[in-house]
Image (cartoon, rainbow, N blue to C red; front, side, top):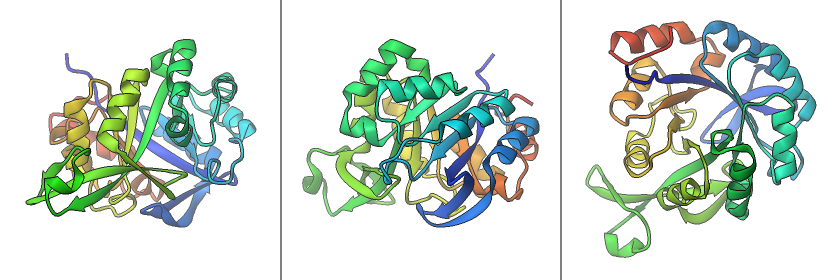
Length: 271
């Protein structure tokens, strides 16, 4: 029997409130974090991702008490990220109730943290978040050390950004994906910065490229606007999970509706 695909609501949190923006800016309030977490647990979500989106840029630690309170309300697997910089930080979050942690900025700045934390807590607990943005080039000669993909007759590569999408790193996202996997990441949360919040669909080329090069589960993120977009990222890009925010937060498409549509399309789902 094929593995079921996962539907994962994402709670981007700042100051205990869930927010949602477009391409990582223009943030709008979407509700209370605890209430939304409880609602999604009851609505049939397979997992939750909880991101303190300004913890790294503000150089502060994630809100432990909020994680504890959310953990008490939620009975599905629950991933937490934002501002985690050390093994001790990760230990605190897992003890507070999270099943997994996601690292982005700290992993780029200190890749050894991936290996160290995977050795201590297990690869299944370590999710590396990669925020990727397209860079188009005139010809392959313009980006010799990058992994180029031809999209609509143009060549592009994807650049890794950190600090909640504020800081470009110059790193090639696909090469970074290979590196973090070799260091012990058990899963990758892959967000297209170009598609984030647009509701125009996922970056199918980006997700497909990751899925073809890596042998760990890929969570596709950024761009979901309707159930067909989620179906596409499962069927075209072969993602293992689809993460979405806006369509769930504002109840445009309830989780059970999305799952029924996926099921009709022949995608194995936990109904």
